[in-house]
Length: 143
Image 1 (cartoon, rainbow, N blue to C red):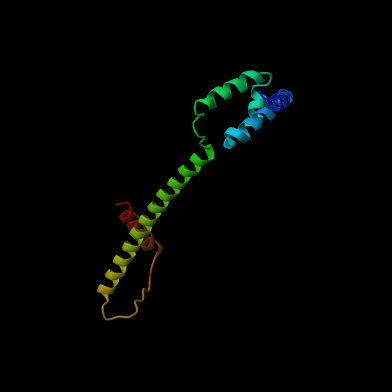
Image 2 (cartoon, rainbow, N blue to C red):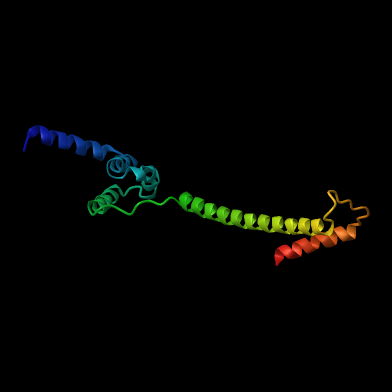
């Protein structure tokens, strides 16, 4: 074995032993799994004083291919919100289409009632008849 290689290995080991658990985890994740780098601080707090056990466990896990990919909670929530928004938009479009159809039917009915007239004038309209008309349109939409 080359003396320089042994010296370099010894320096690396010495550096690793003088590092905090967080620094060790950062170094490890930088090399093997950069997506988990942000977990180093949290893990160091959670496993304070268990440096050797943590590093041994990580080495074992990553020697067999590593853990499953991280799935962010925010990504799941965002996908769920997007699906809900799309569903609501589809429902709103369906309601708008139904309302348009009702209005078209009313216009056609009015035009059929007065085919020769370009302008329809309604003189006396009371509130009760307006309420009845609105309620009938709502009932038609519900059906």
